[in-house]
Amino acid sequence: MKFFLITLLFIINSFGSALDMADSAYKNKDYKTAIKYWKPLAQIGDSTSQYNFGKMYFKGEGIEQNYTEAAKLFKSSADQENQLAQYALGIMYFNGLGVEKNYKKAFILYKKSAKQGNEFAQYNLGLAYQHGKNLNKDIGQAIYWYEKSAKSGNTKAQLNLGLIYTEIGINENQKKAFELFKKAATKQIEAQKNLGICYEDGRGIEKDKQKAIYWYKKAADNGDEQSQNILANHYNYGEITKQNKPLAYKYWSKSAKQGNLEAKNSLVTLCKNSPWACR
Image 1: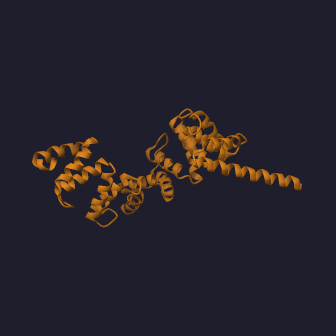
Image 2 (image 1 turned 180 degrees about the horizontal axis):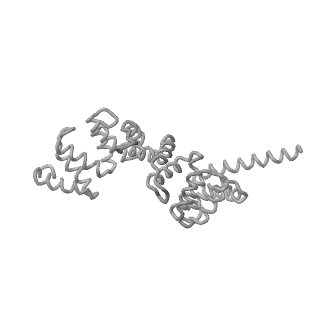
Image 3 (image 1 turned 30 degrees about the vertical axis):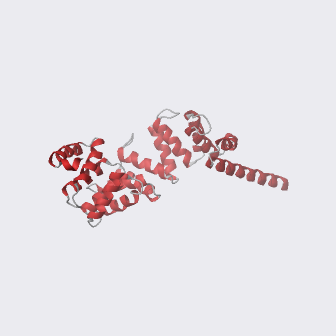
């Protein structure tokens, strides 16, 4: 009995050590060593190794990209309730990568993963319920899952939830929308634009012209064509900031290059009436 326990402890310690070495190798982009440890562990049924080895097949890291093999490994891991594998396999079913496209299976897998706290699966569930991708639209369920994802710091969920709260109707809550846009603005350009709108119109926060321009400019400089057009309008007419027609020309030009029709028309008018600003 004593010998059996010692052997078992040795196996457990060796197993943990192999996982640690694989993890360390992967982080250092030593994919050959990571595969050396994860492959045999995956073959004997370790769900973490199955997921990680599957991820390498999915990305083509240290091994030829193979979606079919990735899906097989993700499924073996997902069947053992690995929430990362459930989410990854859901992505593959949703996009038809290595498996036949199946929205229903993707939804089931997202839900399993989401219930275990996966913020990305929660966000995808929110999207599915909001837009009714092969299921009935349910804005209440969309809000429920977006809120869970948003609380984990998912900026896409924060943005989408904020947009829902700006809509006039039963779910309208401009103050909540503002707070969510503020959180999402660290990564989401559309949230930056919406913060500009909030500050300009006093939606969920007191009006502040300077902050409105700050957020419009941030979004515009990050490439948002609508913000570029809005900012150009403000520089052209000088309503909430000092008039500056050369800056109006600059931002209308940026927006027009992205196909904004209003910006294109405004450029023509600006250059006709103030040609000095268009040099």
